[in-house]
Image (cartoon, rainbow, N blue to C red):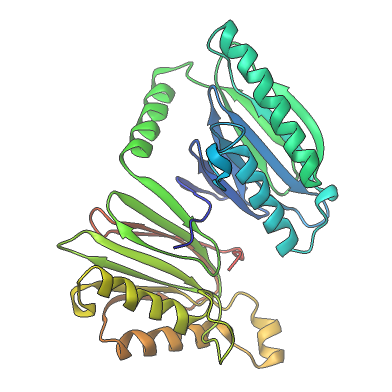
Length: 334
């Protein structure tokens, strides 16, 4: 299964667009007018922003390097490699990005020395990957909320924990993070597993199918970009390959397709003028193909929320099968 960048709390702001909130170990990459924020305590946050295209993101890493050379976005080395992959995907040169590093608040003198080593290592990793480091900032005294505005590249910093309400909100988010890990799927990615787990994605013309088993509390989600592979190498971005992978997974878990609650989301007409001139409605084609495949494999379709001209944030909780849907009027990545 593909482990994608994680994304947690999303709140709409009518003036500035969506705000994506990152817990420690999370990563987000997207485009304006999205804002990306995090609560920075003792760890490190890294922001990436491309001025010409206004795309970029942020990660909140727990350490500089993953153990035993693993590629894990919880660590700076894995997160920086992931940002490099995403930048290349959008054909944007790495050296055109403005990259900023923010160190958290050290707990004591020993921790302060370790912070210094960590920041030096991260800065070295950024340069080695080919990015341009434009700012290094270490905080002292208290924790901060950082917010990156992808429309302007401006990062605001504000002290947190000063009042009781804000402290309670921080503790609530910490508790949520401890109870269930959240996996964010990028286009062409798929995940199938057991509770406690939350799976989310952001959809435009792409389609997501969610599966949930009420008795065993397992299931998954896929983010489909194109309807079928047509003889090409089978990748999870194709509907026939992704649904086929779900069939394999439910068989491995000794379950039957009819036992799952299945929902379909997405397939928006994000660029109607362009698609009208080309005659290609990729959203509709994705919806039709996914429905056809699910019915072919005897899945029970419970809910369908497709079409329209808005992006959707989908969030599936494998603990209870609930699906949260946030609709927004701006294009999404997929």
